[in-house]
Image (cartoon, rainbow, N blue to C red):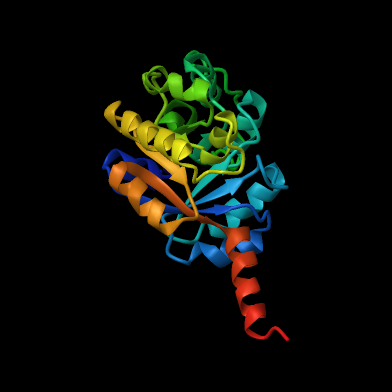
Length: 254
């Protein structure tokens, strides 16, 4: 059995725009419902949602038949958590709160087997198709995609150093935490925050790395794409559910 191809990673290498949806609802049913909606990738979040390895496993299984790539965000840059999601079959990870090159190197080490890294070895995992993928340990990293998230002023100061780390496949700008770091908590559209985000995208692109972002503002999403983002999340499932159900209710409000 062959190692599954990472179509998301290949698309980034070919500079093909990937439009995504953030999935904060932890159920497999919700994941499958949006898997056929036409997005290039779905982000299964476990940092700011109730998700965990078991719910992510069900989500990965639910979307596997669909033409969409799965990206998983662990709760932190933690070697054990990263190992668990990789063993479950996640091929693309978004690591939150990476502040500098050393933390980026730690994330890279977590997805690689020794001697290049520290990922624990197990032959009977979903990632190996339960031992059926020939040469998995030797070739796994070829199809793994590591995205790191910069979301503070310190991280922005270190963008070039982070981008230079071998094994970092893309850099995602997190506007929410960045706004808080800059003293504008809850104000992601403040001009000073927007200026920092815009500059970060340009710098990431100048480093030759794919840039990513999440924004629920379609106008700003298109602007980010024009600036150079290659993996652009344009909404959150819970947000879409809440806003659209509110709209419907207001149509019949007494």
